[in-house]
Image (cartoon, rainbow, N blue to C red; front, side, top):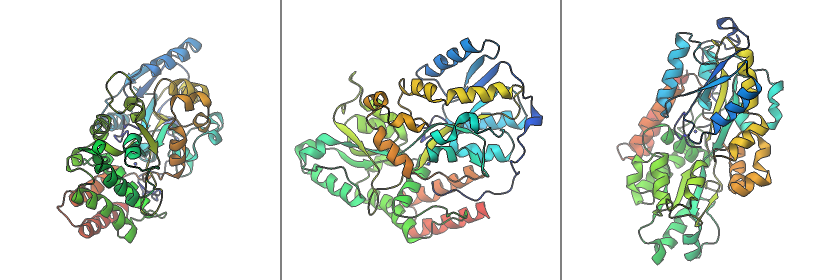
Length: 427
């Protein structure tokens, strides 16, 4: 999913970290604001399609005494987080419902900036299980999953067909072999092999985590200890480093975020591309903006020895501890993440949603044929670490992985330094 709140996307890492100190989160924060009913605000990202406004208008028509006002936050995820944190630190009641990147849930819950949600009205069994877990902190639900998803592989089916390649790759070796075959065809001249997101931002953390997971490793183990000093982690980083070294991953992509890669693929200059589901609609455009409309398909991410594992992305909805109208805020969240509302939202834009049933509905599948692939990938995806110091963790990954793919450090040195840095953040 395109990162509107986190970047890579839209929007992902490994197994959940054991949580550090910094507040128990057991207190629902209710003393900071009232549990009343009345008008509320919904702090969210840019409403690019106007769909959220439509859904809010429907709520307002049915709840004239509890109307919601949409407040659009910055598109940049770091700026959004900073704005939300600043409001929470001064205990502002400016926002009632807040849209969080899934990885922020632990921090906001631990610092008692959001309140625990009752699960029964949300019908938790009907969510994608992996998405639901991103809303939990120490076993309790603090945020309802709304948008979810993981990285998928976009590929040029026309170029593979011209080169005699009948199936999308399941392994890295198969992918690079397919690139070699395509390069030998007239149609493949000037087309780069593969790219993801490698600029030093959240997307690099996501791509590194996916490479490690797709080699059978983890960035953190189940006990919350960093595990980037393993053969599997080395294989994952080596995949990226070797790709840059031999040109399979074009050198220019070291500056790619989601949009740079999306444009490179959409302009017909990339054979394989790792990105989020939002790309599908843009690459399928028939207005002349896409040169690959009707020429591409999607598949699960490949891995070292078989299909890979993506990183779970997503946005969750939570109630601010400082809201005066928490009862209305909870009901509004239940409405927004409800099956009917998610369906209406999903038919207007291509961000993947959290309710399982939508991935199998004929109307949704007709509009978004990639949903079958996305559902399978999301079920295999791993979450980023549920850790209060996530910003420091992702910064360390970006620093040391970035040094490796740019040739400033060897793979072994980068992982040794990263292991040390992460150990210092999770002790």
